[in-house]
Image (cartoon, rainbow, N blue to C red):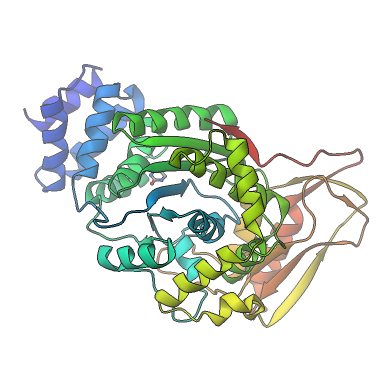
Length: 434
Ligand code: URA
């Protein structure tokens, strides 16, 4: 069938057969179908959606468009934890070592960050010498030795998603539930795992701004996982305010290590112990998430997880002394306290503004080409629900350059805080588990 006929069918909401959709997608990957034809098709999908069967065909065709990471020879139970991205989200850095303590391996690909949310790759690269395993073979070695398998994204895995995503980005078709769900799940399904845990962030600093939208996306993603026979759990977690206290690459690795020693922020601990509890259910070690969380809490501060992280960093060429002495991450030339402008309770702390403020200091990229500064960022001292008096320190900025961007970053961070005269409840980090 001609490309124009496929587009017309989708425009008119007529179901596409497996062969039609697969053939159309493959002809786009080979260059036969043009960008302008695919743009029209994506807009038709955006407006009319996809049937369950079409969604499966799209996901499967994307998954099979490149290499599959099979991790042959790995015997551990493998979890792929994926976050939809948020401010201060250093979850993988602490979670993967904690899972390893329970004999659970992690298998995931991670990339660089763009915009106000950071990438796990950038965070680990705050450690001198660190390079993610570049090949499947190297990843198998780190999983076998340390339980931690995180690899950099490669061009060869799910190339169709990369091509489609770039087009969606410039045709206003990113924010479509079936397109987001199939894009994320095709990447999860391309890597071997026994269980998938999706941490869908909800709120100001996230892709999904409210719980109902996030639940809708979560349901579609779980449905796709189940169509492919994977165990999938979805955690909906709050992103109205940043996760934890540190925002910025080195500062986030610092916080992840401190959390594994018992010195972490409560919201961050809650998230990593909850996800570990779910992983233990998926593995079959416990029969309820609560039971799993209890075991995770007992192991969180024993130091075993820090040892796994240290070994992983060393295997990846990084300097392990940074894990042993995490204060080595605190290298920004200057610090500055941002103070409360009035008495009251912190009623809001807008995650996106905090993320953008850290980006102005150099912690994130505005464009793909930007270099990041691993030392800079923000440490929050007050968060939603805290009582403050005028002049109290709300946050500490770590920075290396005194320029206009610093002034803008200070203004943005001050403006991220909202106050109330009456008591404000500390928000829950876990909003729902599905
Ligand atoms: N993240 C993805 O990987 N794909 C999307 O479509 C949106 C967010």
